[in-house]
Image (cartoon, rainbow, N blue to C red):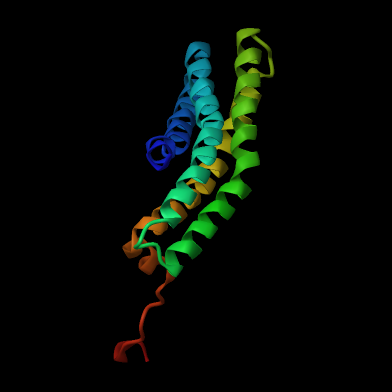
Length: 160
């Protein structure tokens, strides 16, 4: 189960990033086909979060059984789970809105461009949330990341 999580957990952020770029380009050049492609990427990004989240539960139980699972890793896992739970409604909401945007675009609605822009803006917020989710996930198995985000710079004589 852990390997499934590792295989799919990056899909939401990368699909969302590419989708945002395509939304912006589609709005600039006013291309309906590109806008549908962009919204499809955002739908994949949003909806792929659910299987990533669900496989995370199985990974959680597997990693707890490892001999090198320590207290800082346990704390990082808890933070990862909390950030994922916080991000879930925003990420899934973006995916569902993207599907609605595809339908509006296919029907040539006058609101499709506006909705695509709103979804793109939501996508930017979602990318920041997903970056935090991915960062906290990385801290579970990469103590060097954990140290970099929790250490405070030490004072030197030049700072006084």
